[in-house]
Image (cartoon, rainbow, N blue to C red; front, side):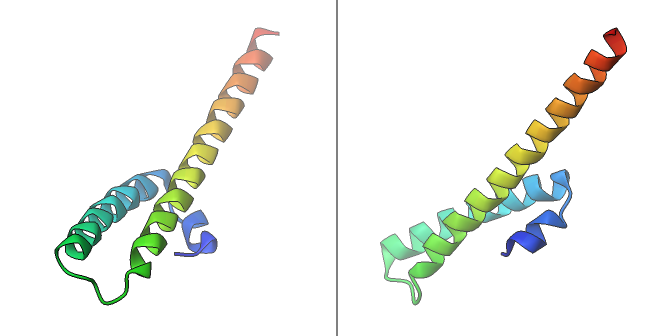
Length: 77
């Protein structure tokens, strides 16, 4: 998944996608433990996708928090 694709997703879609990818990662790890999977680099790709999604979610939450704080600060003045 590319960063441009992640930027197009809403917060809810990102949270849902993180859940899906974590489930996918668990399945891949289990399949790899039982017998070697055809492409073990898929595990790393899924881990990186989860990290990208989590980073974008954290960034959006921080931006929302910062805008809420600035809005409340301007109202108190």
